[in-house]
Image (tube, rainbow, N blue to C red; front, side, top):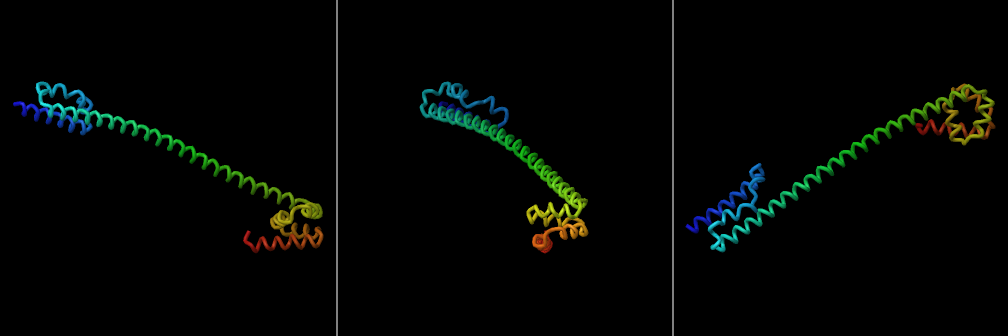
Length: 179
């Protein structure tokens, strides 16, 4: 009869381990640390049963701690994932805003250049020639390449011949370069 109680207690403890490992609501109610005193009642004179029950109880406690640690780590990972998603959304918004700003700046620059070209188109060729002669050659060549051809011809005619040759060469190389 004593052996039957030992085997019954052992099977009961193993059953608790199976129930605890299933992860359902019963596992929360039946913890390994609460069961041994009831199972060992009347079997305390068998040292093997007591040692086995204590070992199983310790393993149950270790499993419970590991599950709690796993739940804590799962929550930490979820929080970290949320922080990463928030940061990613902020970076996407910043990237979109930067693209919008670049587009606006490019449009503003193009609009500014168009306005500048219109100003040179409206100026008297002699006045435009005086101003363009004082500008850096690359910039002056860019303006001359964009003004109306008739206006550009009159402006170049008003620039000193050596400088007009440099500007004309830069305009030609700009067109040949595909700009």
